[in-house]
Length: 319
Image 1: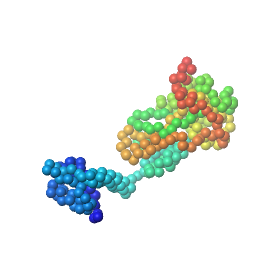
Image 2: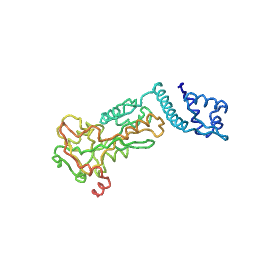
Image 3: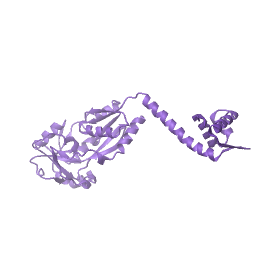
């Protein structure tokens, strides 16, 4: 059998789709006699009749139907191969994705789990992370907690447990788990310069706000000194060396921290869209278990109570 060319298969597909040689020729931008000769050449190469010529039009034979169906699949595969080759051949800059230090390891896990994407991780400071995203310095940001979402789109990656950081002499410092309502009498530390949504997240609806801090060290010192308590996601503190004067306690009813990929609403990159979709569909249960502090495994917590809690319930309890 002689070689069959892709263009010949496309001629046959056109005849099948248009229901006749004349209409197929018009759709292909060629004359009817030229298409007729091309189909005849294909039939000689295959060795069987592919088209039945009728007084009014033409239809595919059974053999023609089979070849046309297979030809469509071949045409799609060739088009996909050409497109992918062009993408590889044209050097494109990597997708720049920022993460704060406490989420940098998680970003590394996402990149490792999705090796088909060219990603450059960028360490970000919590104060400037979203500003860098909005300015275009990075394409995507991995952000934990709540924030001003104006002109931004988000996709949930996972949720992180938050715990209470208490001074060592706190009335609940010796407990494994406490209820959120039991901490309503405590001042809660916030972060300086945060927006409304960020502040609400860190305070978790606390009726009493404590001092505002600039960094994690200030937070720990204020807690140790008895100036207030803090609600922090485990990844923020899990890797800190042993500390004196501070205790972590799990809290039933404390709203967890959402960790999301964030991008600008005017982002049009298909590579960014594919990376976000791959990360969003990832099973968060397969991510690293960060439930240790100072080398010790923390006691199990009431996951159901934490995930179903709401600020409304906390505010009702404080009324």
